[in-house]
Every structure is written in structure tokens, then in C-alpha cells.
Amino acid sequence: MKEYKDFHLFCGLGGAALGFKRTVAEYRGMVGRFHCIGGIDVDPAACEDFQNLVGVPATRIDLFTRRDYVAFHGKEPPTDWREATSEEIRAAAQYEYPDVVFLSPPCKGFSGLLPSKKAASEKYQALNRLVVRGLKLTLEAFSDDLPACILLENVPRITTRGSWLLKQVKNLLKNAGYEIHPPKDQDGYHDCGELGGLGQHRKRYLLIARLPEKMTSFIYKPPKRRVKSIGEIIGPLLMPDDPGAGPMHRLPRLKWLTWVRLALIPAGGDWRDLEKLAPEQYRLEYVPRGAGSYGVQDWGKPGSTVVGSAYIKGSNPVAVADPRLSPSIGQSYKGSAGLMGVLDWGQHSKAVTGRAAATSSNCPATVADPRLPQCDNRFHNKYQLHSWDEPAATVTGIADIQAGAPSIADPRTGFKGCTHTAIYRVVKWDNPAGTVTGAMRPNNGAPSVADPRMNCSPRNGTMGVQTWDQPGATVIGAGDIHAGTAAVADPRMPTDNDRPDPPPVIISLDGTWHRPLTTLELAALQGFPVTLEDGSPMVLSGKSDARWRERIGNAVPPPAAKAIAEQILNALLVSEFNEWTLGSTGVWVTPRNEAFPHAEIVTVNKD
Image 1 (cartoon, rainbow, N blue to C red):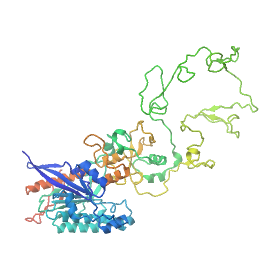
Image 2 (cartoon, one colour):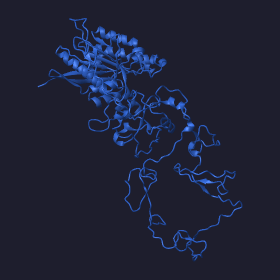
Image 3 (cartoon, rainbow, N blue to C red):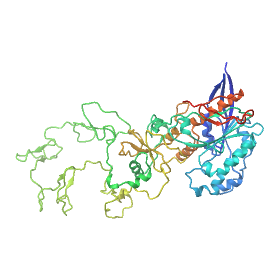
């Protein structure tokens, strides 16, 4: 029989290490497993997510000192607020001593997305100091039996914007007896996309501290995996707004101009490509979605599938060529001779009756009149329709269709219920404007202008459109097209659904639909499960997409966390036998060999 060894994992400062849940490893017949004993976060919604996804309670603890609380929030804490103590950390760990502690302190103050001036403010410096505060409380809480391994994960810029804090962290760990990676002459960066086989590149900083007395073995780096494309990750998902995927798969509601801008930005580009456009080179053309728009079905053939969004402009035909005549609604009427009859101009009329009408069978009351209507001008083009694809006649100063101003057979679909000639009119950027009227809104006739320019200078990546067959950009906490690269050139075309406000589908020049990513798709790119164990769609705590995206972007991708955990678990198992193993992926933290203090570590390449 195999022997099982459980190792305890504790997630402090953000319960992000979701991938440790089912990590196992085996060495010399002993099977090692991680058992999560708890987590800590200040956000109650994040604690609830941790409980739902990991199955272990997370404790809500505010790790600020009073001074830093005031600096960050700009006000005094509530009267019942108290500074956290090491005893609260022990309680959050269920009074067990963990073998591994995973720390993921807030990274906003270190992130390159935050301007330097703002990052240097006292508010964000207070947030940054949680790096040291959290570690101090952890070492105090478990001082009687220190963890074998402590990990600290953050954004790469912590090495510059938080260099003075990292020095304090390393000093604390060294004074407690830990060996540290990275050493001074190496960096501690890795790509979570390569470690977890994600659909995004996500570069992160990782500090690993190993306690030699408990972990005598090497900690090897995880093997690198192929980074997948966006399409590989989100392609198998249901289309956005499909009710079967849950509320997190809702397509963001964007303004019409934003949709146009996304369509004009080439895949792989961002807002800066809009500045290169020549607006007069582009125009939008309405193409009814599906083969059945305005379709008229044959009376003698089976009908098309009846869908929930059945209307004449939909993707399924819902009109029919009905040969029956019905003078009134609800009555089936078989017309007799004379109904809608048209009399010949050169023949005598039939008897005139008291019910003479075009729709009456008593007497044909319509005549084929060869004469042109008489008027003083006697225009031959009075009420004349011009073909859409032919040149127009001479434009005259008589602006009246009865006096000769021509009409045109316009095949384009107008706005439903349109009664105003200028309703929702959009004027070209390089054309003169129409007469300025007192109308206040576009739907009353006030014109709009097709202005593709951005009147600001957003950060790099804003409104970025990613290509379907390439890995995505890093998923950030502010995952929105207005804050970064959060759109994709989707080659799939949506079908009609029951959504009351379907989004505009503008096909770009590359033949794809440039659309924003949904919250569920961002979670999938982060490696989160899109369905729960019972098969239902994943839904995080709360109802706010912005809060969901913040927690998703702040999390450590579960597959990357699992890859790291596997290497640490292997090292823990080997250390149980006081042995060491060879590896081929490079060493994260080398063992301290007292017998051979100057021995070199040799790694074996796979090749």
C-alpha cells in the first residue's frame, strides 16, 4: 500500500493560490498531497469566492496598521476596528502550522498601469507596506514551527518601485534562517502562461524562501508549457450572451461609436491606429444577419424553424406569400369576378353600383388611365422614381416631387418607426453640416458626426484588439477595453438570440467581429474553471462585472499555481527521505550543503 503524506498550505494576503487544491506528487512509494488550511483577504467577496472554489474558509482580516489605514482610506477606521495580530493569523490557519505559505500582496502600487506620481503618493505607499506587514505577522504567528517554504508573488515592477520593501522582506527571511531565490545576481521573473499553459502571457515576480532544516532538497523550476492562443481557450465556450453560460458571459454594453472604433482598429492594434485613419475611405453597410432576413416563405412548402426572436428582419423568414384574399382581419375571403378589377381604357364600363370600390366585386372601379396628370408645368417626371444604380436626372430648383423633383428607389433598410428625415442622421466628418435646428436629441433630428478621433491620449493597449490565433495580453484587474487590451477579433458570427438589446455586429476588413471579451472569457484566460463541479456556470460572489474582473485580474492563475505547487511538493517529499534528485528545468532554490559548501549545482538539459 502507498503511504500518504499531507502537507498544509496557507494562503495569506489574498487567497489566490486556487490551483493548489488537488496537487499530488509521488516519491519512493509515498504520495504527497496539499491540504489547504485557510486563506486571508480583506475583501468579503474574495473570501466567499475562495470558499466556493477551494472548499476551505477564508478569513476576512484587514492587515493595515492604523497609520496606513488612514493614509489609504483618507479617514479614521470605524470604532470597532483593531489592528490585526499574529493570533488572528493563527486562528485563520485553524491553529495548524503550515508547511507552505503563499503570499500575494496587493500589487496596484507597484503596477506599471499606475502613473509614477500616483504610485509615489502616501496612499499607495501604505498599500505597498502590506508586503512587509503581512510577512512579519506570518513569521510571528508560526515562530514556534516555521513553514518549510514561503512564497511571495507580485508584479515585476516591485523590484524597482518596491525595491526598498523587498530588501526588508529578504532581511526578515534571512534572519529567520531561510535561503532565498532569487539571489542578488539573478532575477525572479517567470511567465505564468508558460508555467500553466495559459492563453495569455503573464510575467510575474516570484520570491521563494526555503528553510534548510525542513527542506533539504532542491526546488526545481516547473517545466515550460506551450502558451495557447485566445481562440483555443474561448473558442469552445458558448457565444457571448448565451443564457447557458451564466451572467458572467454577458457582452459589455458599449456605445455605438465605440463599436465603430473597435471595428476600425486592425487586429493586433489599439487606439493609436485610429489616428492613422482617413475617415472618408470607410462607410458602414447594413447587411442583414442570416439568410432569412425579410424572407418570404412559399405557401406550398414547409415553414422554417420558429425561433423566439421571430420578426421580419430576423435571421429566419417569418413572412409568407399568402394567395388568399381577406377584406378584414380574421376572415377568409374568396374573391369573385370583379374584385380589384382594372377596366380597359378603350372599353365600356360595367354597371355602376352603390358599392363601387377597388376591393369590391360589384363593379370594377379602377381604370388603366394612359393620360399623364394634368398640371401647368406638365412635367414628364412627376412622381418619377429613379433606379438606385443609375445616374440621376438634372437637379432643379423645384424641390417638390409633384413639380419634378425626383424620388429614388432606395433599397436600404431605414430605422424602424422613422418619421423624421433626419432621425439618427450621422454627418460625414469632411462634409458640411445640415441646418442647425432646435432639436436636442439625435432621434429628434439633431445630427451627429462620425468622428473617429480620440480626444485624449490613453495608455498603451487601450481599445486593443487581439488576434484570435495568438496568446492574449496579461489579464489585469481593470479588464476593460477602455483600460487595456480586452477585445478580440472573433471569426465566429453570432446568431439571433432573445437578448432585448442585441449588440451591433460590425464585420471588420479582416472579416472578423471585433468585440470586447466577456468576464467569463477573461476568467478562462486566467485558467479558472468556467463550470463548477455540478456543471453549472461559474459565478463569482456579487453581481458587479467590475468587481468580478478586478478579482480575476488580481488572482494567480490556478494552472500556474499548480505547476509551482508540484515542484514544491516534490521537494517536500524528497526532503522527507533527506535526499535530493536531479532535474532538467533549472533550480529555483539550491540546498545548503554543509559538507560541500562550495559545490556547484549542475542541471541536466533535456536535449
